Amino acid sequence: MLVKAPKIQVPKDNPFQFDVLNRAENAIILTQLISTIDEPFVLSIDSKWGSGKTTFISMWKQYLENNEYKVIHFNAWENDISNDALSALVAELKKGIQTAPDETTSSKLFSNVKTVSAKILKRSIPVVVKLATAGIIDTNEMAKDLISSATEKFALDSIESYEKRQEDIMNFKQELENFAQSLYGESNKPLIFFIDELDRCRPNFAIEVLEKAKHLFNVKNILFVISIDKIELGYSIKAIYGNQFDTDGYLRRFIDLNYYLPAPNTELFCKFLVERFQFNAFFEKRTHPELRYDHEHFIKISFNLFSLVNFSLRTIEQCFTQISIVLRTIPDNKFMYPVLLVFLIFLKNHNPDLYRKLKQGQCKEEEIYEYLYSLDTTYVFMKTQIGLLLEANVMSSVCNYLNKNKEVHDFIQKHYYEPLKNPEIESDHKQRLEHINHLMSNLNWGFSDHLKYLFDKIEISQQFVS
Image 1 (cartoon, helix red, strand yellow):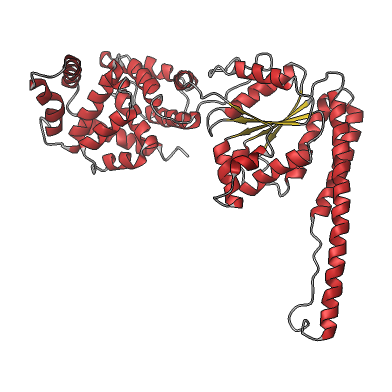
Image 2: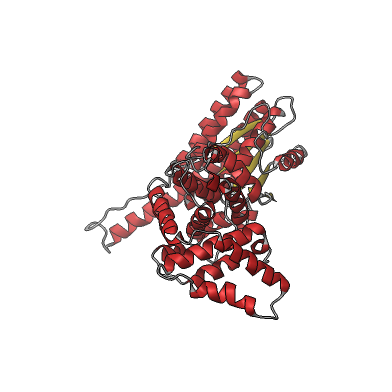
């Protein structure tokens, strides 16, 4: 069993071998799209943070390379320490030389690109006129003449600097186009320039990357693919331009087409994580007869519970990491209460305030009961066998944890026993309550200690989880 799931591999000969989210079709569609574009273009891949965009980009990148596209991958977040986006983007271009049809020619052309970009950077430094400070500037006519002369020179220098900078930009674009053409060769396929992790960058750097990519790299034979969470990137833009700023309109200036990556299938991802964390090996060691259902219950409750809420893939993976650490602290044939363990880890990540209140014994049974049913707004999951098992385990353990000295708890009596005395109770509801009562009767009523046992394990595990 692993503490942390290893990074998903992207085999060169089969990029989508580990495509657990079935996104190969999206890559094929997008490849067909870009094959029809022969002009400067910016495509965005839009999906929520932690939804697997970077893994998809890695797989698609390899798929494009296998189909003879020249590809450059720029991780904006890793380059966030740079003081200038243009320098970082130009430096990334150098990687394209290695796969150029004529490496010598491409190398020379890249040198031209680098030289001209250096001129742009130099002219970006503002001309500053420093006037004498305290004690020198006064109101006499001589001082006024000096200020007027300096201001006029500053204006002329600014205009001249602007004109030269525009000339440098035109030269840069031409040299860049020549370089891209050298990579283009006879394949008739554009250079694909991926920009990933942009929404994780400092706001000013993220905006600068966008502006440089659109205004300076807007040349033939280069197609940009920008991986973003549009909502998160919008927050970065508003951090610079203010909360009332129209971020959608701003982004439309840079992005020609927005592609929404379909939401991932949570159950498929959970199945994948169970394999990657090697949980099966842990349960195979648990041979005691009373533990025979632990594996089945762990799998079913994990798949179903994480599918109820809008957790990102990254958050789900973090939950599984926490579970993995807890399981490592439990001996092979010791009770681990899989339903409760998964629920508590889920609760801690989904509603940390309620988790804290429960741990400290400061919440009421009704709060947990209402929370359970708030997760299943369609009331489908809670009617299933695993939903009934979850309710029986959680509510019986919570009641015992909060009321350690009571043999039969008021909450259990009110919600699960007394309704059965009603002659007008609906048959479906009656069967459901009878099933829960049966499950509760088979549970160990020492669950007060068991819940504390799991709380302690989870809190210890948090010392190892970032």
